Image (cartoon, rainbow, N blue to C red; front, side):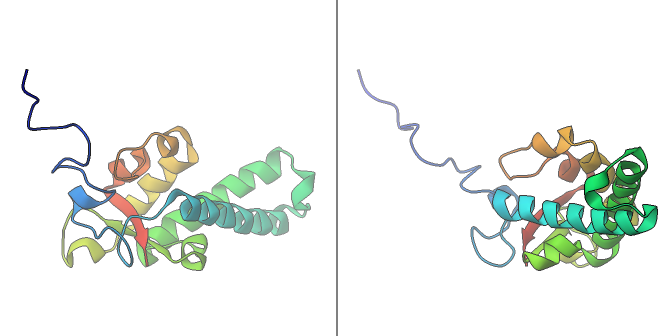
Length: 154
């Protein structure tokens, strides 16, 4: 019995590495960001939101409470939506050398601004948590798919 031409081992023409199908490089600047950096950036943004919330509600971070938690979530949402929408990256993204770009070419291609609506949609779904942990081969969570974005290295 003869074996098939496709061995099944190795990448297919459709998917070779995260970002291949989007026309992004395999490594270096503009490549899809890894999970470690993305998680560290998210934690940095969450900490910044916690510090601001602590100042707003007048409680230390460790005190918690409904008012603190609500303030932290609202501040995280506003900060992330505005910064991603207008600057293309949050404070955590900047610290870790990441940026959010549009995947649908428009204006200046992939480097076009996400926009406030895209940033707000992406952040709203990120705040729901489940869309962020359901992702595709290109490391794009449901929040990125819905907003038409991808997180890449700066």
